[in-house]
Length: 122
Image (cartoon, rainbow, N blue to C red; front, side, top):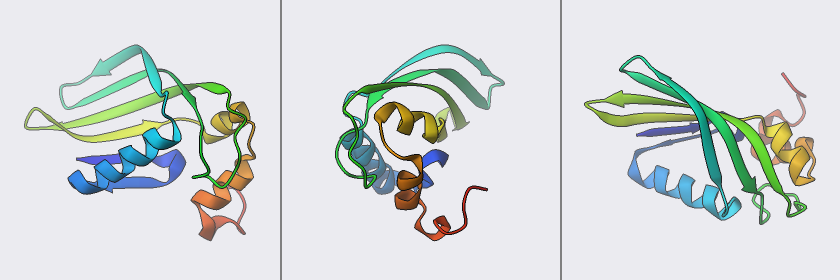
């Protein structure tokens, strides 16, 4: 399975990478919860949308969060192969998460995307 989180710039492939990515995610957001408001499918791809509620913790992103629970819109795309999930793409706005967590989006982006730090936003 391939697990992509574009806001964090991460792609995990295979069991070991997925386990590492998910452990890091849940360590950073231990109270993560999502409510889905809708979904659509064409038999090969399933898309869902809704709201994630999560509290940024720790220093993974090089900042000190305010400890408040964020509430952000999310969009999740699943791909299937042989009736199994072959891929998940988890989309959300990093700036919205950072604003609600009381941290600088620029500082988080510099930590997540160090090679792009000098280039500014695309």
